[in-house]
Image (cartoon, rainbow, N blue to C red):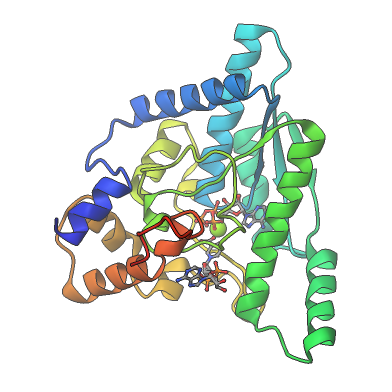
Length: 273
Ligand SMILES: Nc1ncnc2c1ncn2[C@@H]1O[C@H](COP(=O)(O)OP(=O)(O)OC[C@H]2O[C@@H]([n+]3cccc(C(=O)O)c3)[C@H](O)[C@@H]2O)[C@@H](O)[C@H]1O
Ligand SMILES: Nc1ncnc2c1ncn2[C@@H]1O[C@H](COP(=O)(O)OP(=O)(O)OP(=O)(O)O)[C@@H](O)[C@H]1O
Ligand SMILES: [Mg+2]
C-alpha cells in the first residue's frame, strides 16, 4: 500500500468528521473508560495550547456527566506545570477558565528539572543541550501527573493526536506517556473544529501550537521546528496532495519515529525491520 494511505489507516484519520458527534463519542469514551478502570477521575497538564484545552474540556464534561449519572464523586484535576514563569501564562489561565476544572493545581517543575540537569552535568562533565533539557521538562511534567494520578486515584490523559503522532513530535515517555488518548485519530484542524463546537473562544483555538521546551527558543512554533505547516500535515492526513518537499519531510519524520509509536522492541517484533 502507498505510504500515505498506510499512515492514514494506521493513525485512524477520517477525511471528514462531524464535530458534534466526535465530541459526544469522545466524552462517552472518557466516561466508559474511567468507570471500567475503577479510577476516580482524570488528570491533565494544561499548557494554554489547543490540545490540552480540548482534552481538558472533554474530560471535565465527562466528569460532570458521570457525577450526575452515578452520584459518585468523579473528579477532573487540571495541573499547571510551568518551568518557572511561563511566557504565555495568560493563555494558560484562559484555558483554565474555559475548562472550569473541579480541581486546579500548579506545580513548578523548575527546581526538579534544574536539580536533574545539574546532577547530570556534575556526573558527566558534559553540558545538557537546550534541546535535551526540553525533553527533561516534558518528562518531569509526566512524572508530576503520575504523582497526582497516584494521590488522587485518577488516570493520566495524553493529548496525542494524528497530526503529532505522524511526525513523532512528542517526548518519548514525556508527554507521550499517559493512560488514555481521547484525541487519537484527529488532525490539528479537526481538533480546532471540536474546540469551536465546545464554544471555545478564538484565542484558544487559533493559538499558535508550540512545545515551548527550549530555553533558548521560547514559544518557538511547532511549524518552525518541524519545517512543515499543520495545514500540510492535515491535508496529508486527509489523503490530499501536498508539495513533494513537504511529503518527503513528513514521511521521513514518520519513518524515523516508528519506535515512538510502538512498544519497545522485543525479539518477537518486526516493526523495526
Ligand atoms: N530506532 C530507535 N529505536 C528505539 N529507540 C530509539 C530509536 N531512536 C531513538 N530512540 C530513543 O529515543 C530517544 C529520542 O526520543 P525523545 O527523547 O523523545 O527525543 P526527540 O525525538 O529527539 O525529541 C523530542 C521532539 O519532540 C518535540 N516535542 C516534545 C514534547 C512536546 C512537544 C509538543 O509538541 O508539545 C514536542 C521536541 O521539541 C523534539 O523535537 C533517543 O534518545 C533514544 O533513547
Ligand atoms: N507548561 C505546561 N503546563 C502544563 N502542561 C503542559 C505544559 N506544557 C506542556 N504540557 C502538557 O504537554 C502536552 C503536550 O504539549 P503540546 O504542546 O503538544 O500540546 P498543547 O500545548 O496542549 O497544544 P499545542 O500543540 O496547540 O501547543 C500538553 O497537552 C500538556 O498536557
Ligand atoms: Mg503546546
